[in-house]
Image (cartoon, rainbow, N blue to C red; front, side, top):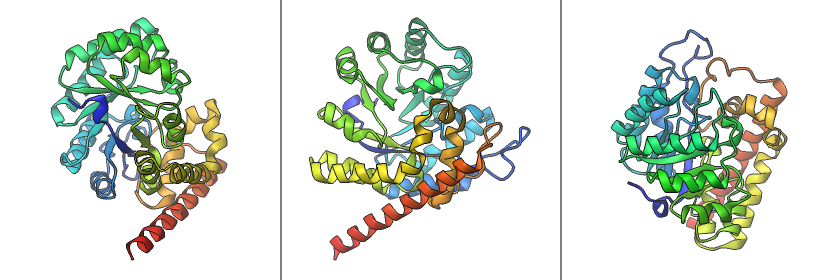
Length: 328
């Protein structure tokens, strides 16, 4: 089982490419298998340190069980053991989640990205017990806590991490966006959990916990992973100037969407659509339509997504030019 110390580098988060018509409620067999395999293979060849599939950007809650199984098999086969792979397994309730965890555990994936059931918000007692039961039921499967407070309507307080550390030994990492109490979280878990932030806040995390912040994740990897990899590599080699520039570049590219990322209600309703829109506009991946009922996106949000994609393409081109000149 992968340990906290073994989770390093930049983990690319993929969308789940969809076929035309996937936005219909009665659509079946919606997965674009060829594109899913192609983008996973391309990300690995382009240098990501790991793959995360079937999170929010991957439309985990919108997939039928048949489509879920297809994605799991396709992603794991495409990775072919070259990098660690975490596959989302969150279901509507405990039994549905267990069904998905069984599929992920049997697929050969490194671990499961696991959020909380979304029907009723959980108390801390419920949340700790949920992860403890998952750990007991699947003792050979590493768990990455999907600590998204906005999605799961739960704040993941320090007491949660204390409980999980004591009762769920297979939890070795957590996908986080913000961690105002990072020092207390690290203390509560005895550094047995790697708290993995996004590329947008990685520079801040590294400044607060340089010895323990060894990895980041990026949904922007679906537009091309190079800017996020550049940040992670600069931090790894201790190049403060390069890391600061890489973080500023990423902030500049995301600026057209910053007001939407910051608006809790807007982002909660349009997270998947914004990600798919900017990924489609960037041209690195063909994500296809967002699945029902999440396929609505206001024109102004689509325009901001396109502006972000254009800046990301420009940033990738600059990095490519620098790499070419360095090779010469």
